Length: 109
Image 1 (cartoon, rainbow, N blue to C red):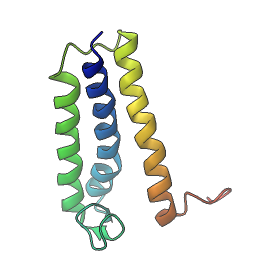
Image 2 (image 1 turned 120 degrees about the vertical axis):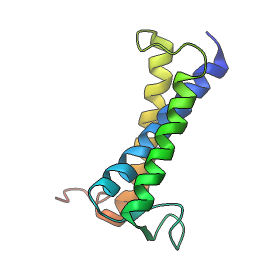
Image 3 (image 1 turned 120 degrees about the horizontal axis):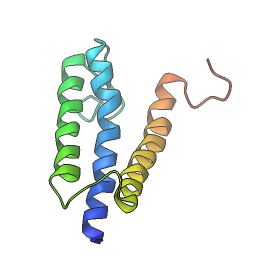
Image 4 (image 1 turned 60 degrees about the vertical axis):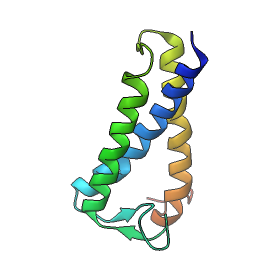
């Protein structure tokens, strides 16, 4: 088990998770926060920018997971590293985006 491969799979999970809100918002035709907005990461970017940003994140995730080492979902270490990346970025996204969309308030519906 190569430690650098596991690190790559972790960050593959991070980029994969970051792709989801951007790509989905863009496909739905909705603006969403992105690194290209003003102020950076807080303002809204167009749906087209978000589709492109989401797709870029998918490509990076693919490169980190499928082109480094020999990733296998049936290999526990590989799956755990990828899953921890997904979880870490998911929690970070929930915290960062929740303040803009009301998701950081208990009992909010």
